[in-house]
Image (cartoon, rainbow, N blue to C red; front, side, top):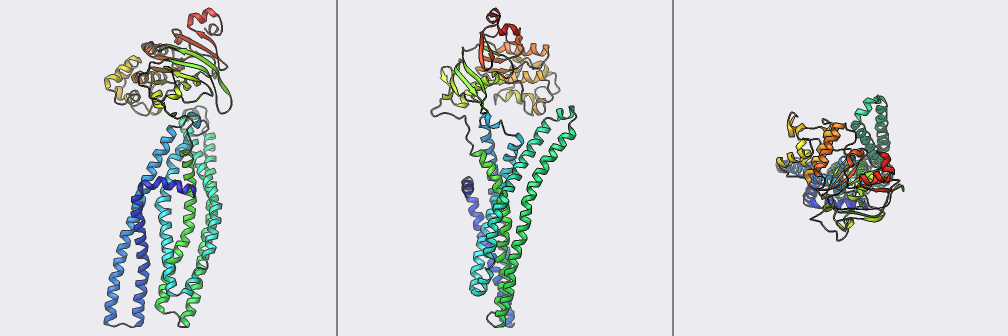
Length: 570
């Protein structure tokens, strides 16, 4: 019920549509309740004998019945289409809202999540809201109104027979409650397994080169097969319970019909019930048990929809650990002075990555971070952008604690160039211009020239309109790096972070990337992580990090004269 109340708040935006759909549902139910009575009246006229007056009444009732059936078409259309329209708009809103929430989650949230599972929540699980709001809720309203309406009519025809009709209802309701408790967990497991299957497929499709290179096609097919049948088994367990419940409801409902035929015949034999009323009772009997029998389908669909809704709400209700603080300011003119004051950081696993880090760099300085893999160099740069929060100490930007600066303002002034460069499946122009929407073609070309990639782009078949494929598949590693640098240059942010920008490239490409870096040196504050020390010789400040601590600091000449760890790296 708590979940349903939260979901209802999401749907209030489209209450106008729902009001129209509900009113149409009421009208449709009223038509369905009136039609059997018209038919029974026609039967009564025939039973009493036909004459000219009777024929006139039958013609009137015939046109009335035709009008009712026509209205039923109109009201059914309004009820179904308007409900679906509202439900699909709601699905669209929830997909946008869920995706938007994912965009604003801190990076630690994604550490134990699979991309495919998150995609399943955004696309598949949100779709279950359509099932809930376009089918389950309207059908439930229709069934309740129909049941109450038919019960009133049956009581007005013969209260004794109506009471006998109600005999199976408690049994059906009790079995429905038991069914809901039994089947819900299996639908939840099924949704989870579907997410795991999507996650495995996403991993394998992204890693298809590695799978084929190492000849692991058969192994990965088996792994996907396991995930596939885990989902199927969970679904079949839920359907097994449903397969028992549905026939049981139908059987209990048929007992009511048998009782009506038996006792109705007895009352007719004693002349306590007319043929007209018997016909009306039998016609309404189908309407009476249909909502109760439909309860089985509604309960199954409800459990399935709520299982998906829970997975969506889990994301929407998970708070991001990194948000704008109260009174956070928006920095307009950022110079790029960065200072770490006794900063320590550990991941949720408890492993301490950085210990008591302190240093200062002035605007326009180039700071290089060197040291073995896994000592916290990348983590240090991510702390600057507030992708993570330090447990101790603070980080200052132009004298302001970055926790007192809005995330939008902070990240707007930082441009990253990562080792694992991510490019979108579009054109080169779109990827460079991604950092600065609205940038002119000339500005994009100037940024490409500064990144030393312009000449190579012009040699491509479509120049800047060349499509590069998913993750820049059609570009070399060095080209992707320089497109990423061009993107950072175009943004004109006062702070640039270069994370292994020259890793895994040949000497010539390294030289070109180094030229691109030199073109912005002195005009931006640059943080550069590098294993190739040739790229950071001209850095103003070199920080040597080991075991999460700064063990040496200075420029290249100073550290070489020191004769310590840095000197041993050269």
